[in-house]
Amino acid sequence: MAVRDFVDTKGMNWKVWPVTPESLQPRTAAEDYLGDYGEGWLCFESHTERRRLARYPVDWDALSDEQLCSLLERAAIVPARKPKHPTPPPNEPRA
Image (tube, rainbow, N blue to C red):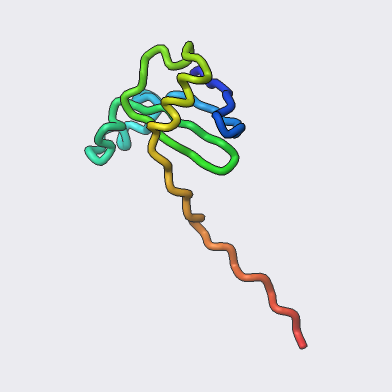
């Protein structure tokens, strides 16, 4: 699996890689809810944000950084994951 690093027009560092149907759990890959993402997607990740782009060019890893920025702009922002187990509040000091 190819992974590319690039810098967008705002100076943000990004990593991008493909998520293919073969890399998904079989049960997940068979789900109807994947919609446009059923054939896979490009995953874009910075230190503050994640995005997904369905229906991407086969030769995405040979594109210029400028072309990757164009794909990034079209990609959907992925909401931040909520923790599975909430962090308990810190202990309050005793009086």
